[in-house]
Length: 397
Image (cartoon, rainbow, N blue to C red; front, side):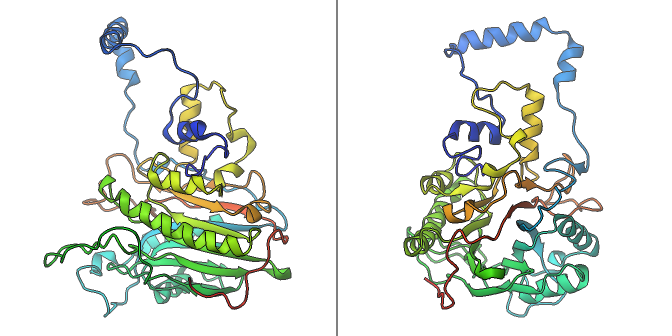
């Protein structure tokens, strides 16, 4: 996606322009600061006050904003995979293994939001759905049996990710899941932290904040897909080094898999918590993995140097934004073997209710019909054997 040249492997500049809404066209020689200020003042003074007021973007209330409202019709014979961060999907059963500081009543999902999540998942109609921020396998089964009774998700996997707050990555699937594994003992580069003060939020940069969940998915005809469902550490620039170290370790796992079988069908999918210009983006991009954004509809892939009105660029950017803050931070990355099987034009971001510009997630109750701060991403593939099936005795690294 925006990670790994979201507009194609050879076009980082366009990737950045789509993600950030900047102009991809060559710019004139830079002006001096004084020249720029003078020009801006002249332009502002030349415009009537009415025009200046119209240029200020009005605040937007709750409603669809990012992604597409109506998902595309599934391709005959194709399998749809998707990823969705459900934003703290805790059931109503107290987990005695968690400190009540992290599993208090406010984290238990309310019926309205659970129904909104289920509605989005039904619309998405993914055959394999990778999830983030799930309390446990038991909680996910409760959610499936309560809100997704006719979904066909016979197979469920979710393992403890080693996160102090109790959430983990999970999978709902209509196809068998095998060899689920996590990497709780993996060591990342960095220095171990000093002893934390009592009550401080745990943070060890030498470990995954949330271990990836790796799993093999088996399809008819011997086709197999290895998936790494990930959720990089959240937070601002102070935590970028931790995310970069997590990415390096994940790529070690992936490169080891591909060294054994370069044609292996493999994806890295989930919430990367990173933007296109980060060190993490550079690390993933350097490996040559393909990205879901390479498989957007042709009409949504502007050519290099193509001039578009600002309104068109803004609409295109919003169509592929995955977080309510306006950032593209959820991705599907894939091996060359799997990329050969992906259906061109099948990638999309599904819209759900945006809470509106005045919403404060720290203090406000979300509006009715609100599902999550993330939006689901999906693509399709044809399960022909472009890569060798994963071995039956796959084991953790």
